[in-house]
Length: 257
Image (cartoon, rainbow, N blue to C red; front, side):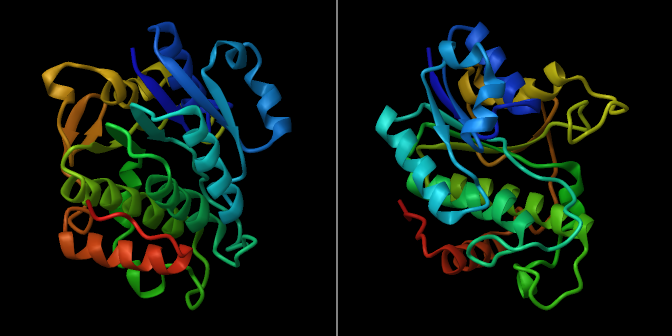
């Protein structure tokens, strides 16, 4: 049985993934934004292998999350599930970064670099990542007029590119990106066509399955099927430029090998 860390596991797809893995007999390390949010986990906490608490808006708290996970032990897989949708304004984190960038892009990058390397990495993206091309000129939205939908699309492009970059750089790690679809969660709304069980299935399968179909790396998935991502995401030059900028913005180097 595997031990899996899932960011953003107090509700929505993160909670559904945690529930599914626990029901299969795997060990799960949960994550909550704050102690207050951790209360929402209820009985899942008693079944979990651990709980990391910290706000992904904050670089210092993101570092603390990595420390908390490392103190539990090496994970077999990490599912980077946490994210925000359309923020009404750029906002500003404690470090001055756009909130969408910080939570959706900088945090998974930092956690990837700082958590002891697992066997598998899974990044939640969106089909909307295809609208996110051309972000490297102003990654942190300091020059452009704020566009919430564009910022979200860019952040989801970034995590696909990150997943693919790691597949190249860390050949012993299985690194993939998933589009869960438009799911009936707090973020997706009650009218979304995809139920949470279907929405969580691909990422949990990639995290723990020994099926040969799941033992691949550098792929983009939707409902257990591989799909073609945006061209920038698959471009090694874009991937490397993105990682260079993320390293600069966070002060965290991604280990090469």
